Length: 369
Image 1: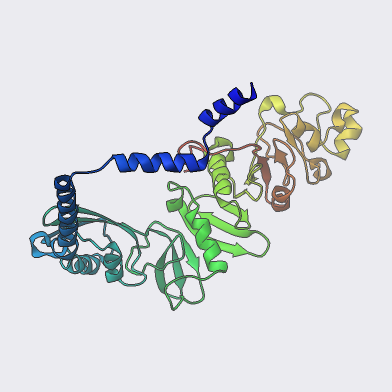
Image 2: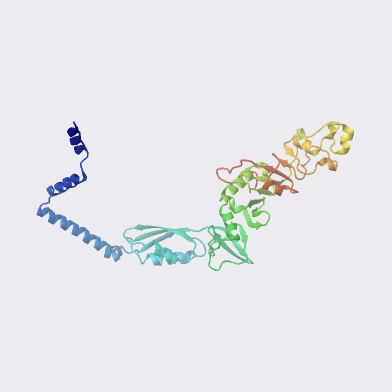
């Protein structure tokens, strides 16, 4: 029984030495005839000769030299110079041997070109698609203006129209911004949705608010730090798209999950007002009208979903009548807290937008022009 098991195991699991001997025996059995060996050797030599002919002569020969160059994607005041440099470099190449790094080097440093997409059309044509850096802001120093790309590369030959202005002391001498305030401001502009960027007039950094973007004919957007700029811009776009934010003087997105629009003037609908005998507001009205007249501005405002965070209107002897605006410091949709509340004091009414998110297009809707 043991002998049978050992024999079966030897068949199923042969030793490594036995496997090597079996492979060697099979290789010896497979032998080419002298004529087949000569043919195989000639085939190998022919392949090697053709490879050497291609590498050493054909791919750099005049038979495949570039004669026509088609360049697309170049814009700006420097477009002519860039095209001329690319064409001159391409005409020294062949369609079988295109050196994209040499093409990039021909443009020089700080050319504003991000990448080149090259396509060879055998035997003599070459297509070059230029991917340029686009300006996201324009640096301003005195009376000089220089566009800048998202990564801080200066683009002096590009147009700075339709992008926000950023004030800087001096321009970098090496053509690229280093780490610091200016690059943070440029990063804020680069994160803006494409449809909102042309509406941004300028971007600044303030000690108490951090990064602030000022919209043309619109509110200022307070970002705070340079972290999570994409989420903050998305929150700002959602608030701008909400019609209830019309007229806001600022939008605070330092907490992007709970943005706040401030500086609003909120009116009350007639059904939200305290009416009837004893509806006077203030200490004097409270004595004349009893318990019903002791309503304060905070009480009447609460009926419309607005809670007073400042002094009550009763201290001023005001009455809540149809169309009366909310007192300074009132908040709609819940009292602003955290970063939003810090900016609302003395700036009119504020409205919070918990869970706000940008619309699919990222555009500001009818709430703002």
